[in-house]
Image 1 (cartoon, each protein chain N blue to C red):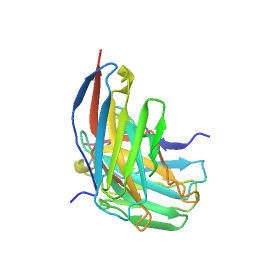
Image 2 (cartoon, chains in turn green, purple):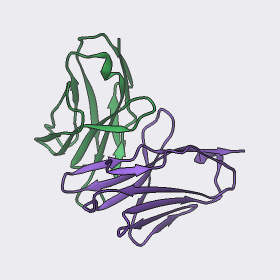
Image 3 (cartoon, chains in turn brown, green):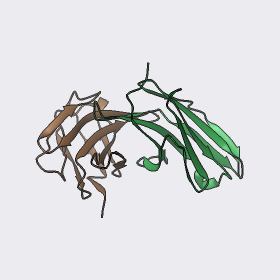
Length: 114
Length: 110
């Protein structure tokens, strides 16, 4: 199993540009999450999904959109990038079926908006 | 009040030392608990889940006290490779969300 994979690893955007951060998991997890982590700070939840077709806002959803058309994929869309969106973005997944809810993270996407 | 609070440290300990990290959670509806480690500029990695009965994995021991809403992690015989930030995490199924502490920084000194 590859686990949780994210692409790209790094990206530089100009203000106002848009992009999609890709996230895929091959563990058949039903729950998926997007977090951002600013330098020296904790993780903040952007959006999450408890299954295909279901998404919910987290703590900091403004400026982002998500979709969950399949169990495996959970892309994060940035519209009109702003310098405040410079951060490291982590995708994560977990499985509710066993009741353990252990969460596994992808390697992250480092985004700079200039 | 934050859902999960932990001492940010930093903790600087010599090799071979025993170090303990503590964490409290504010919502009694939290049902699952975890310790993650995060190396600089890397993703958080699951260190261990925390069970009410306490659990041990090699040099690492985790404890949960539901009455006091308190979680701990004990690291024995610290190694240089244990240097990292340790994150305390609580999960609530009523909102299907994980709540992360801000992390405790550990540096093990030769």
